[in-house]
Length: 230
Image (tube, rainbow, N blue to C red):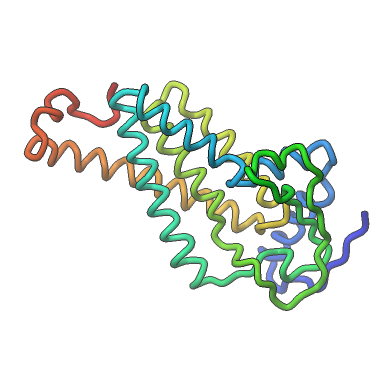
């Protein structure tokens, strides 16, 4: 399928960013991957499963799992506040399909509950040249930063198998480029932001627990001197 572009970015990093976008979004796209990427990119699709998984971990996971859920909640809260409320408004970089012609956008069909859309035809459009759209800003990617923040937190608490969490985080991040929602450079930077916030959240939470829990909750502190231990 041919593509058209309404302009060429002036600076080399942004030219490379646009070239990589079209490679992932158009040249490397395949019908066999479309539904996988659309599902991976949809937070609404996964929300009931994430809630169920969190409840199971809270009830049956024990002390370390509950501490991990607390860290995840804090990390995602900080990431969302930083990404959505601060950086996106300050940077204001539009999404690819709002400024470049020929970007292919994919999304699940509208359905309630959302996971029923996985079996329905996908919504697909090819963007036309615009000056500015109304679908929000591209940098940073909330999906990418949140998923990498969560992956880092899980890895910090469960070193033996926690590295597996980076695979779905990477898939979600890649899918955001594939479906035309974000620029590649924005996604990579967002992954680093999320990973950094995840690590700092765990480090600060662990340091705070070691320093203050003995005074505030001496009984729990004696049983659990570290949040990261079983």
